[in-house]
Length: 277
Length: 290
Ligand SMILES: Nc1ncnc2c1ncn2[C@@H]1O[C@H](COP(=O)(O)OP(=O)(O)O)[C@@H](O)[C@H]1O
Ligand SMILES: Nc1ncnc2c1ncn2[C@@H]1O[C@H](COP(=O)(O)OP(=O)(O)O)[C@@H](O)[C@H]1O
Ligand SMILES: [Mg+2]
Ligand SMILES: [Mg+2]
Image 1 (cartoon, rainbow over the protein chains, first blue to last red):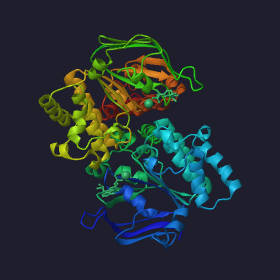
Image 2 (cartoon, chains in turn brown, green):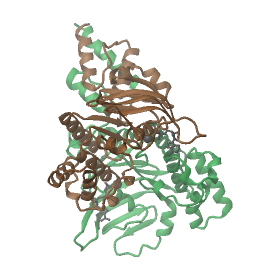
Image 3 (spheres, chains in turn purple, cyan):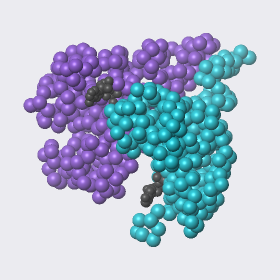
Image 4 (tube, chains in turn blue, purple):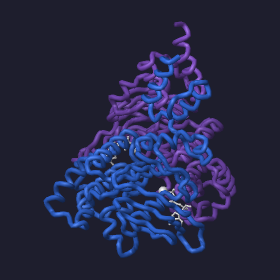
């Protein structure tokens, strides 16, 4: 029963406006990393908000560890489902970085000694330990995102949803933060749900949900997903550089035995191809 | 307009406990009509440098020259207004600075301030939204009802309506999705071409620097660390890694192909298809002789 489940979920923002999610069903295990991709407006953020009860579906049901998400369960559910948005400004509550990280833990009844230690470790994890006394609103976009991530790590929920939560970081910073989050995820057996446009990042997920116009358009491992290039192109999504190169190599008469996900895999395939000639 | 920096240093809040030297002895020159990318990790001084281009900051020492305008410490820099008319700056997240009731008023705000007459403003507004691909129906809407991508285009339209000769862009695609990023960059590139706009772009995307710029300046801790044409700069992967910068993925791959397979793919800006063809040939060719 340890999973998040969407059962035939449909959602619209107003009575008279179009459905934003249409009969969406999927399951996310409690130690999985699932990436959600899809172009703008395909419903990704709406899914995230439904997962921790910021919105409720008009049709269907959402269950977290077997418990239905509804107004009287959300407080309990939010202890297990933590979320970071793209724009953290709407999320800051503390007047200092330290207070902000502490706030979530206070809400979850974390004992004081533990809190002090976790503030330290979570800020160190995102390299913001020198900013404890700073005002969150005065930080740069990337720094704000780091603090928002620290706040969620400190609470250590079972499910962490990152909705374009690293979009304002530079590429190196983003890689570092993702590595840190991955380590935490593996150490503590958490589920990670990332909404991202970073295809490199998507190749590392266990599973990928592709959203299109409010529907789950495709679901599978990154290798399956990126091997369906024509279909992805049809809905206007890019594929990683290695995928494109592999496709073009195919046109040039070099068929690979499997879809490569990164440079090393492609080079290995080429090595094998050459040795078998 | 030609741009040059001669021994420019800039210190924030000098003499206070927060004193911070953000630029140190920076010199370079950018000929009129070029497209220059400025790269460097966070905090390296890129935004500080950009703010010198329209006189928002004046050097603590050294001289900045933009066309006929000169910015120098301790000199009365009285031509600033004229300079700002010629140099359009798109700041980071420019949509945060929208404030008027309608899109049309927001776009008109800059030119109105500079005394441009109503008829001319109207003409420029139409031109600007054509460039940014905003539908005309949006002009009377509130900018705050638009999507993030559209708000960004409104903000950019406002800068274009000034008819600048130099366009300065501080991470103009940050936070947009990949197709939005490409559209915005293609738009700037077209403008650069059509109007010979001197363009200075700050970016974290090595792919964009490779695709659009004809010259790259790399900053590190407030100093010029490297400069040159993209294909030259990206030859130096080790040197770039020392300042926490990557090379574009295609170049990284070409380097790995050489190390792991002994295959030399000379990268000169080919398409993925051309590169694949060359690679396929060399993978096969390696065996044909045996
Ligand atoms: N607060 C809202 N009110 C009305 N419509 C909304 C709201 N938020 C999102 N939408 C609409 O719902 C659709 C899905 O949006 P969203 O879930 O944010 O997509 P994504 O995150 O994939 O870009 C879009 O058409 C969007 O315009
Ligand atoms: N108003 C300010 N007062 C003091 N230091 C500043 C100020 N603005 C920027 N800095 C510092 O100057 C350095 C360069 O900043 P900036 O030019 O914004 O870098 P970049 O755009 O490359 O990230 C940073 O270390 C930053 O903290
Ligand atoms: Mg979204
Ligand atoms: Mg900056």
